[in-house]
Image 1 (cartoon, rainbow, N blue to C red):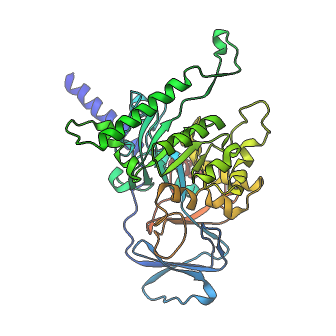
Image 2 (image 1 turned 90 degrees about the horizontal axis):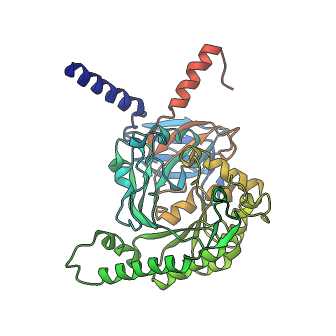
Image 3 (image 1 turned 90 degrees about the vertical axis):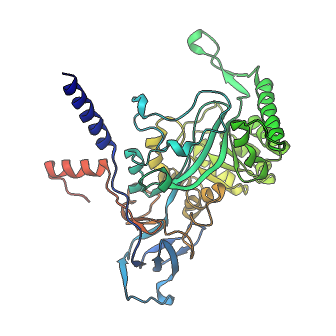
Length: 437
């Protein structure tokens, strides 16, 4: 009987394991290839009609107009993309892809750690490269992302990954890029379920919470400038913040919190800082520009939070910040954020409908996040010497009606665009005789 129970347990584990396995990662590029005839959206605002892009050893070696760019066709695969579009791989800012597989299954949730100050918690070692949720991003062109831990005042240390890998070591593009903080809320709402007024009220503990954070930073700075005779993992993890190696990401939404966060970073001597969320960032855009503070902007498809906000407040905020000269990327955190990450290009498309041109909107999810995260030397745009992390779409990648990928590459590797969803589509389209448009 015990033997039978053990066998059943093993079979259950195997079933769960195989049900979560994604497509086999693509092998390294071994043969040069060229993409010919497509409209190339470079990612820096430039567009090349009828382009040629040559890729060798995972990097772009040639890019230019077809009419003026010589091409040696020997020992090279040719991809005819006439009438199609080529884009840099889209990048998710402030994401949690790979940290949770099924919200209702506790064993698949590695989103946060207990405790208030956790700068030493590294999200990269919890990243699940076998995630089916991660796999479902690729058919929309989302090929890279920042993996960020949640919870506590200092949530931990993030890393950047690419979405086609055997394990987290293979996936890592940049490990331990920055530390994330949840700034104290300067205002809070009453608990309506306890009969309290649900309106906004000043947070009575705000100054105390800011002081606790300030004291913690001061202690970490003192530790890292000392002899470190007694090991302190949390303080040790913060050392690179003060030398400018790591980036500081502060989640703050209202104008006062954003202002206080910027002044806090200046007082601590932090040279690399980004506001995450930034609901009222446009109200203090001049301060952000003056201090070279970038913004990972709150999910575009969100409702206004305050009674006197315009109905399209979240739609047009990117335009206001870009016009003010602030470096902006789009993030997807919030309810059902992992699923919604696949909608990243369509969030950018919404900003086009509210003021930005398409190339500016494209930068919000390509070159701008690459600059903020410090990976723009290799990713974020289609340029000679950079990684061939790109995709070919039949139409406008920012439009959900026309963004249909035919090819996608990460570091020159031709990755699979099959997912659990596409497999189900094929299965039931055959059953009901549905033809794909």
